[in-house]
Image 1 (cartoon, rainbow, N blue to C red):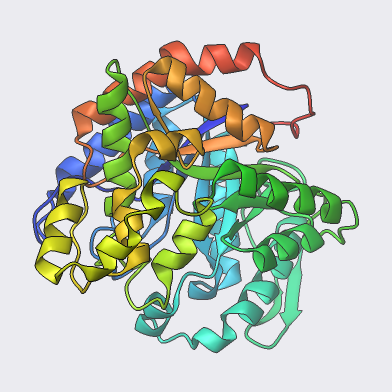
Image 2: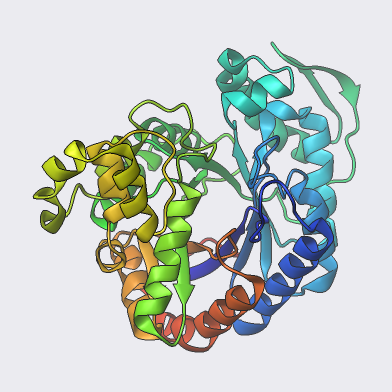
Length: 400
């Protein structure tokens, strides 16, 4: 099993006030510590316009800084939003980062969401086709002495695009995936998966199995097939098992709160989350009728007690989301949290599901910098060595 950290670049804040200078210094400090204690990867998102989630609109800047602050750990776009950028500029930036890191770059890709796309003048209806065209162009740019292109969205006369990547033939390609259709696209194109959906590991295992079967028949868009699967998961390791589990559960619930961009305006969002979490626990089912009958004020008050603020009326799915206890979330692998022994068990659930790397989300708006450092250090001291010792023998792609 490999271990990564995913950064939205978040920190506790009130309203829209963020100390950006402190945020970036804290982020870099955490990343340097992650390399020191044995983590394998650092991943940075790209988001625009999303309050609380837009601390990393230019991941290549943070990755550029880390290229000089680290020596071993692999760094990656998790992900680069291809429809937002000209493919030539994407290829140039990625190649420069790969050179600066002596070939440590991982290149994740995605399409983002309609809110961000419209804000940049991009028609959401075109983004799937734009991603397809861009992901086809990139490996050809990196491998061509002289490149030209006549496509639907981009036209490039014959040009030498420089520099070329350090890794040959090029960095590994990935797709950010949240549903079966995306996993199938990644498999068909022979690129790795960065799963950003929150699944119970029993459900995730079926997606991994389907992908592994389909990727065997891939027509790779790149020079080689990359079948590596990394999965994002909220995580926190601490000395006190109950406290650490509660902190990770609060982090998860706040991340997917009703005011957040991943949830807002999505129909049946909480129903979909609960389904991905393996359904409602038996010990909550008897409460559904009571939740549906409660007043709005009572609903908000009780939800607040478990760490989530609700802005609209009561509903069974949202109530169950707020009431899902930390122990159930850990048992199902929805979070990896608790003391080192608990975290080791959580990682083992992902290993059994066929995942190659757990990509931990630890720096969030509910977890202060000092606590994030504590968790990173404890993963490095206790969890990573134990999981390395029991790692499965399925071959890992060279360089990972």
